[in-house]
Length: 299
Image (cartoon, rainbow, N blue to C red; front, side, top):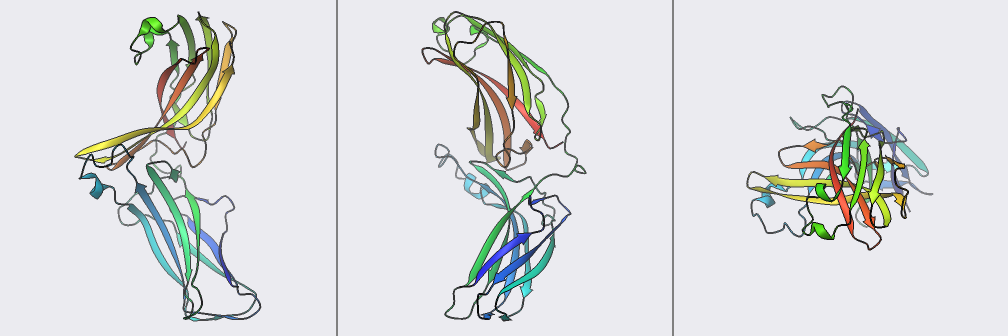
């Protein structure tokens, strides 16, 4: 049974615009030679937009703006029809990583309603009765420091959470008296460095069950006629468990997960933003949340 594989030179599969994507197509023909009708390699990069269930049917105009946006589409003929010998054959290739026309390359990002993906696909056509062979391999695109991308600058955020600062609570008299103070080192962050900060429970009339920090992505798909905005949780880290001591500083530390985050992005058809939620859960399972929009950059 013949097998097909794509091996990239770079083990981490990370490339920047203008670089050469180098590698080899490996064909394992087994014990006998193998006939084929040609081998082609396709490099594709696209943005796939999806509507959440609550937004479907809201706007007819959406469906035209939600077609996948093609960023790259190259096709290479690797081998003309012929035969490959028994055993393993490696065919080297290199393709420049360049956007199609006047398009721009965005960073690889796997979201819920926005997906930015780059892949190499190799196709080996076989004669009549034999099954065609296919193999797809994803690679990752990151911005290079030559891009005009914004650099992260320290922008500290001081915060106080108390019943008075809560905005989305209907019955404030039911909220126990409490006061939490703290700071985040910056609201503009480099994606490869952790989010740091600290918080302190100064006073709380009821027992605390847990303090958590959430990373939330806010994905917006749309056009001039309107847009759909959806927030989904990426990760949740518990930073304190149980009724914490009052007046003691609790550190905040969060590393941004790769692929599920990307530098904050805003285009005509879609936007990807990120937010941090600090969640305090009381003993009776009531919880209060404070929200902080953050901006992520590559450098």
